[in-house]
Image 1 (tube, rainbow, N blue to C red):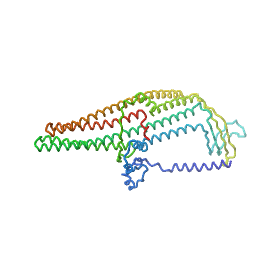
Image 2 (image 1 turned 120 degrees about the vertical axis):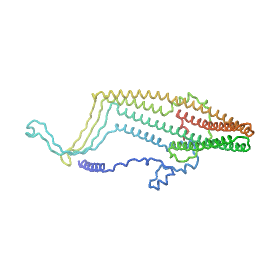
Image 3 (image 1 turned 180 degrees about the horizontal axis):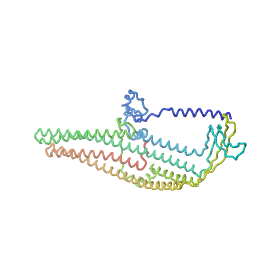
Length: 480
């Protein structure tokens, strides 16, 4: 009894302090977008000087420039730095906690209770009973109580088991969605990486074209000064030089945009300058790819399809949860404590028993819950059938585009060879006076266009190869 009383007096001050703290606690500071920005080392000194504390996510730009980054390195950086990956991981962690919550009903509930109340009530007793006369009022009196209570759910018609299985399915769903996000991040890095390389090589082509244009301008000026060609040839050559310089300006802008896209895909600030290690990759013929095997592999490995299967499992368990509402629940309850009108209660107050509850009518709510769950299951099954078709279509499209890019690259290589030979022959004929400036500059334009097309076709092939790997669910196989 003394122990229970002391527990009571230990709880009351704690509740008072908690209530006071809840009333007097300062409101949370409003979130600011500055708290979630990732800064490069270029901004680090300014942030520290202005009193902003250093953040753990500051990127050391000097470290990033120590050596060129390969594609695999960029993918690893993205999987580590991209906030979308972190958000997916937190989603998986939250799903695991939901599983723990679903397991809670398998444990007993234990609580410590303490209360005080002062009450007065009317007693409906026969007249003259216990010498009460005409007084039918009991109280006012004090009511002090404290004790320990426990309850355990013995049977719930399968509700706990169905909820736990549904939580496990939700966890599996979150895990597969995290894999899907990782593959999306890797795909974005592949595309941005190849785009940056393509624009860099296009800049080289633009530089070569400007050099040729300047050389042709020099040649036309020499022939004009010798009186062999009209002034119009010099002006036309000057226009070609200006256009070549404009292409260089555009290529510089394209490189800046592509670098920003790659940095964003890696989860880094756009302004960081990274150097890339251009690997000498071999272009394999798409004819070696087994299309049927690729389609089947995609169905087996795509995380989106695995996630859809977990949705179907969750829907099936939702039906079981809804059906469990038609069955009874059996609960065991026990309590032990003290209760009295005195400040230190001395009268024992205990109870133990088993209760059963069976709902009879709730406005057809339970029937509607079961019907809704069945419709959601049918919806999930229809969606996965549609998703299978979409996945197979993605593989088919990716394989077709890969074949197109491979053939375009081979054709472009032949066009470049012919255009270079044409450029050489036209220049010799122009120097000999057998060709016009228009012929010379047209050959130059044709060669520049062919070189641009070759650069685009080559790196489009590798981008299409990455798209095929993503469609098959294998893009991360060589990430580590």
